[in-house]
Length: 315
Ligand SMILES: NC(=O)c1ccc[n+]([C@@H]2O[C@H](COP(=O)([O-])OP(=O)(O)OC[C@H]3O[C@@H](n4cnc5c(N)ncnc54)[C@H](OP(=O)(O)O)[C@@H]3O)[C@@H](O)[C@H]2O)c1
Image (cartoon, rainbow, N blue to C red):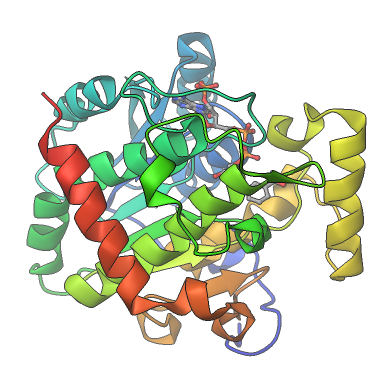
């Protein structure tokens, strides 16, 4: 399973080691890549998997599916609306374990109509970044304690997208984040999605710098035919497929699409994973693909401080 510069030959069933005693938390587990990740990780018998979403029916069906083949794995569906920081904060109280080994920040939205979250923030920034920052803040003390256990291997995975390249000129338009940011579009592309996915990269890198006992990385899964992409208007879908094709990235099914996040979460050994790095499919270390903005420690720090201020005011 060699890594680093080229593609990794990775088969989750074959290459993920036993996850016995490990506890996992995955956001957006009710569909798409999150669901595929829950199913794959459950096969390696962790002690417990928490997963989030709004769709309780999907949550129940996933638990039933996993229990059929892996009855010993504990499962908790954590219902939360990530467009409400109060909902997210409260839902985190359902986490009851004394350890957390893998936090996969996977849930996401793309190309949503102009809107603000319940807290008044641009909707992509709110769901894709702020909600994950709240979950991370709530669970970080447990993750840091887990990292003190001998032989532990605590990881935080942030799902980003090559769409991060569509970020606004200065990266994050802090001055208008508390609005719909209707001005942030260009040739039909949503700069708002790009801004939120840039935030996912910057935040993971900042966590790695602040808490080096946790391996925190960001990962682009590739273009995967999930609802996120399938539900796009035809022209927009064509643009997503076309631009990725030009970059040599072809559309994958969920079975292939899940590989990147599973590799950084549990397939790669702790030593081969570069803390704070950005990975592309599958297991390709891709910091050289980041622009000055996505590499900026100053911007990451500004985002951290901005986010801390927002989260500290949530009741
Ligand atoms: N698919 C791709 O081609 C692609 C490419 C690049 C990056 N990504 C990234 O990969 C991640 C997963 O994407 P996917 O394709 O698997 O998406 P998906 O199939 O649309 O699934 C999205 C998940 O996020 C949850 N979610 C969305 N809005 C939510 C909200 N307001 N509150 C709570 N949960 C919410 C959904 O749960 P409920 O419906 O139950 O709420 C669902 O479980 C995203 O971060 C995305 O940006 C995907």
